[in-house]
Image (cartoon, rainbow, N blue to C red):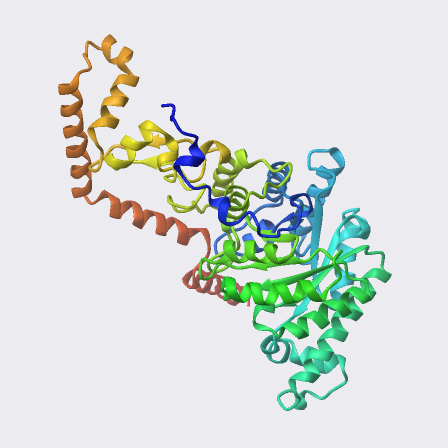
Length: 466
């Protein structure tokens, strides 16, 4: 129907409360997708090189600016995936301006192995960005990579536990800066760098790590919340200090995980502090609770904050989500914001009656914006209005079948809808569906029993050979 009053007089625009937030210009924001690395690290997920190429192509098409392809030095499949992606760029099948990122640890051996892998597939070091990473929290520096730092500094391993944290901090900076300088000396132009577990590190130390890394030739500092433990308040505390301490022309990258379901709001908070690149994965796939979901952050930025990323294809979000489900084997929950199968579905009689008047009654995310489709689901909560509207919509078909649409028919159809749905609930079929889902999920990866069976099979073969 047509409202007598302007819609802004009837409902408050959420941007009323966010329009004064000082985001960087939307044209400077960069979507950094790590579906091919962090996303694939989700237990049970594994992509072939050809699948990685198609994922990359689709995400580049939707408007992703940066694509993390992981560690090409670790396997032939990883190198093949990178080769396919780079060939696709050269053929124009993947956007030529897509920034492709390869990863390696902060040491010459890793850098050389990555350069060798690039050479084998005819990719120049200048064609990709190197992400050279280290550790960032004192916990990781001393107890995860501490022995590596001791060896680099010529210290005996026996000194490991007794040396102060200050030793590991400075040794870590020297290791990263040496690695950045080495990569630049070998023809690498663009170097992303940072320390794992940044959100549990010291902010002043990270500022020093970033400043020294930039002086050594690094180009894009990356600050991660590796275990997803930050609140929006903590995110603002860290990010505002990092932004204030670094040159204004530096493009800072965030990397949030979603362990408490705060990844999206932490990402947005970081951008509001002045970060300009943000890490996401398609469908939010990733280790543990996953990474920042691409669909959530870009849609929230546009609808709730008025930040529209130029060239991004919001209307393809649902299409990409279904594609990623088929690639990964993992469907997203039906009520997943923006892309869930049921987020634009309505059953409750109160809701469906209102939606028949105008979608904006209960539709906070515009379905058309993100490639979704509003639909009615019929069940025990359905109301008479939606049944009658549905019958009227298909009145011609019913007339051909000799059925006259009237109030009595609508009432009887509603009663039967409720009866059928309640009958289905009594059959117990729902529990069986859930059991099959988890059984199929377990089959995507290998269990401990699978590993033991493989070991027993290899052992028997070896024993027989002897």
